[in-house]
Image (cartoon, rainbow, N blue to C red; front, side, top):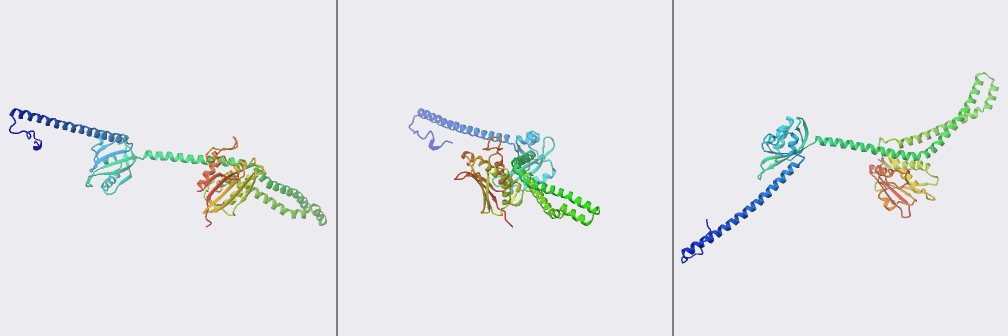
Length: 449
């Protein structure tokens, strides 16, 4: 149909000659045909561009589906498979044409799963279904656990058209988790070995002081035992005379010569001294055992003041006599955790202070503590040269040390930092304005109740 406004005959009049009228009509018809042809060409170009864009989108979708490592199944509302991806094909060992058109339930390896899957699909319109575990058939005929997500395909009116199911075999995930757990356990064992090694290194530095500490009570015990051994000879001589039936006068004279009464009065102090020395030796050895042994109970309540005082006592026995430690501590600083590990931290900080002040004329370490906002804050301030600015940020890095080769492993402060963190606290370092370094130890205060 030709539009009357654009009719090729509208500009002609009755006075136009027939030849001119015929020629003009054909010119207009050809012109209109050119216009229509150009419009058709433009429509064809647009259509080709849209087809190209559609093919690109389709190719993109296919490439995404092919590269998915997760399993993908698309089925209709009757649970018949319409589409699968390469991951599912590889997983099941079946061809694409073998999978399309079969029931979704044929993928599952347990009959108990059938009812569960049907129940999930029936409720998809109202409830999402994520991370559901089912047994899938594998290419070798066995089964393996797979976690699935069900997503409904709905029409504009909310009617269920089909289901999109994505899943991931979790057998590999279980194996990866098991390997990760084994690696984590091995890391914990290695960390514990490093902790123990550093503890033994600290213990080695204390040996000289501990040996001196043990020498006094042991020497005291030995002296008392030797004295009692001499007394036994006199007792034997007196008892032999008594059993031989000598006269009372002779026996009294012998008693006076052997000083039996003096020995009897001296026995109690000798025994008390020997017991005291033995107990002191036992306490020192017990303390060494507690420090060197691997902590089994790491959640006990203890007094931080006692830990600090004991650590200072031990370290100062193994350091030069000129190294002094001043302590200003409250009587009770309650903390919960591992006393052995905490003692390792304190010993390390004190030993580091002794090393840092070694070249000072009067090396000094001041240890003080206070309670603030539910925290116990312990300060370790020495009068050494301080710490270089570029080294402050590295002080707690593993194997970093400012000590000469052979004198430090670089693990002491790193391990100490980790111990304090595990106790819920914080260990920091800085320099004092008047010179020297300051280590600040913060720990949660434990309630006395």
